[in-house]
Amino acid sequence: MTQPAPIDLPTKDLFRLDGRTIVISGGLGAVGSTVGKAILESGGDVFFIDLAPEPAGALWSNIEATAFANGTKAWYHPLDVTQADAFPLVFDTIREQIRHPLRGLVACTGISGVCDAASYPIDAFRKILDVNIAGTFLTAQAVGKEIHRANVAGSFVLIASMSGWNSNKGINTAAYNASKSAVHQLGRSLAAEWGHPQNTFAYYPAGQANREVHPPIRVNTISPGHIETALTKEAQETGLVDDWAKQNMLGRISQVEEYRAAVLFLLADGSSYMTGADLRIDGGHCSW
Image 1: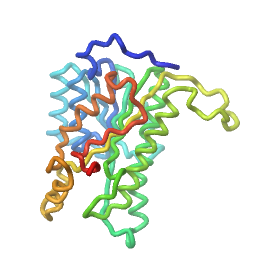
Image 2: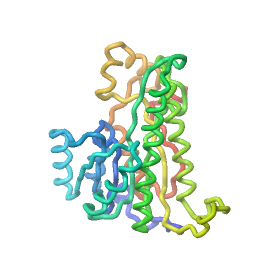
Image 3: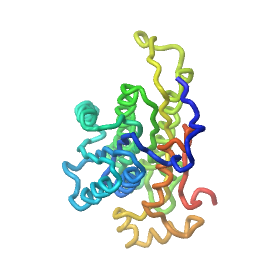
């Protein structure tokens, strides 16, 4: 099913998300909560999911105040994205609460770990892959099913990393780097499957010959550079942040607020002809 180009959309509405609900996984983290508020300010409702049983009071009060000021809605539900069996119940809840169809996802959930490859414990390595790539897939799968159920078009933003493009200098993070490279490929693969029915493999396994046709879901990734968050405090104390700042063309690391516009662009109709792509926002780190 081909989606018409939004040629009559006014320029002022290119970044608007009115009438849509967006799911944010890792929604209580620095990036997730920041872009979530930007979505609320741009007319979209947001369903935040994360590990915590309840969101922190001050953070959630700020999110609710943002929603109230903009006539939008925010909800929260705990979810471990590595637990496939937990998704149906959570999405039953989401379906009952939202007032607009699910039209998008920002997949922010991710963890890292520092260890020499020669001594990397396999359980720690597998956990990073389980959260960063399997968890991203399970979340995208669940939101994709809901969008297909509603028979509407959608747009996904998977948060990858510049670490999926290169090897981090000064820190040994083989598992994280590998997982973020996998997020790039997952994004391209989902974009191919969900962009148009002609893109799917013609020879289906037995019982899958009659594949349903749905409006397109665009899938893109964002590759941030180093970001200043609470998690970088230890790196600041050891001087590693200063080294990171010297490794890019702008001479500083990024702030979470600098990813708002990119997320809004990819979710909204301003990027209507963009799918299967990666936006690398790294201060020129990978361009030396």
